[in-house]
Length: 169
Image (cartoon, rainbow, N blue to C red; front, side, top):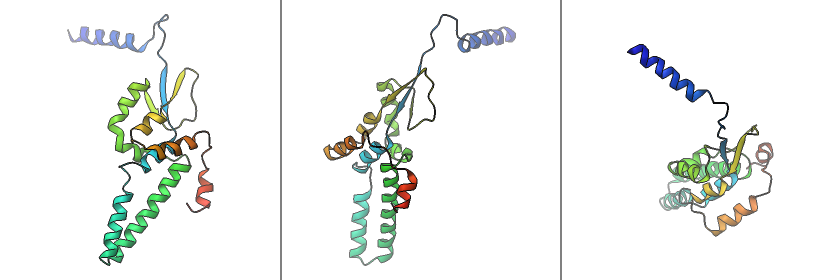
């Protein structure tokens, strides 16, 4: 009985793995996005803690807590630097997408893609690439100002990382 079950499993697995001569393979569809647009959407969203940190800074200043003020100022400089890298260069935004990760499968389903990725080094001819930038942007519920900025980004080349570092951003 066990040998029959194993043989049946091998036959089923072979049928799944080995394509039949006449059957057409489904194309892999990859959703890609511009990380800069996602960054702008995040920066204008409820997920960006800048307003909260500024309130904390004002409270620390009112209380004369210079250590906390310095800590928050250092956070602000780091946060701004990271947003500049993500908003002007091709830097990963996985930490920003983490805020909406539970909604990524729905974006993929609606766009009909199997994968969502920021960039690729090579794409085979039999892979469909679909731009899902605006679908991801929408997850951050951007206002008109953010959408205008995102529109301006389209067609503009990203700044090389070395250039932005050289300018101290």
